[in-house]
Length: 104
Image 1 (cartoon, rainbow, N blue to C red):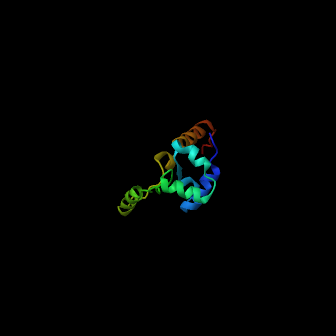
Image 2 (cartoon, one colour; image 1 turned 90 degrees about the horizontal axis):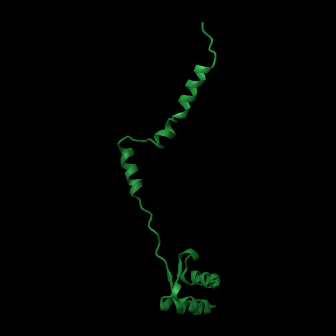
C-alpha cells in the first residue's frame, strides 16, 4: 500500500479541516498518490476522489433524560454496587465474628 500521508495533510489544508475528516477514495489510490501539490489535490476534490467527511452528531437525548429525572428529584449517580458495595458489609461482618470482642 502506498503512503498517502502528504496527500492527506494537503487535503486537510485545502478542505480546512483535520486529517481525520478527510476521505480518500480507495479505488483511486494511484491517481491520489500522483498528486503532490495543492492544485492537484483541489482537482481531486473537484473530481470527488477526496471528500471532507460530515461532522459527527453528538446526541443530547441522554442529557435530556437526566434533566427530566433531576427535575423529578432523582439525583443518584452510579450503580447500586458503586453506591453500596456488597463486599464491604460482608468483610465487616467477618471481622466482627472472628475478632475477639470485649464483653462488659
